[in-house]
Length: 138
Image (cartoon, rainbow, N blue to C red; front, side):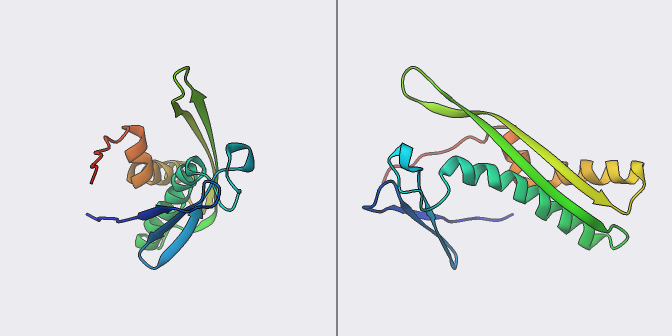
């Protein structure tokens, strides 16, 4: 079980948000058309990248635990669609992940490996069930 703490602070430049987690720091922003400065990916892009990268990391973790599995290629392309509602809200309403994976396994073994990757991926498992979010105003 892990606990992650991310601190985000709105900057006084466009829509930039200075974000820190552990020793890492990065910028979240909006494109210029969204009143940002395009200094970094927007929040939806980070969300979508989390899905693809988590799948790849999960595949790598499984292969490290099973040396008989050799990953020759593992690439993802994640596409997301947002919907803008009449009241101004918006939401990600569709996510499509294309996975191109090549291993040394036979067809049945590869299929079982990919099933394990999807099942064990924390981000995919979270999003497919739409995590409840507790907001605490302090």
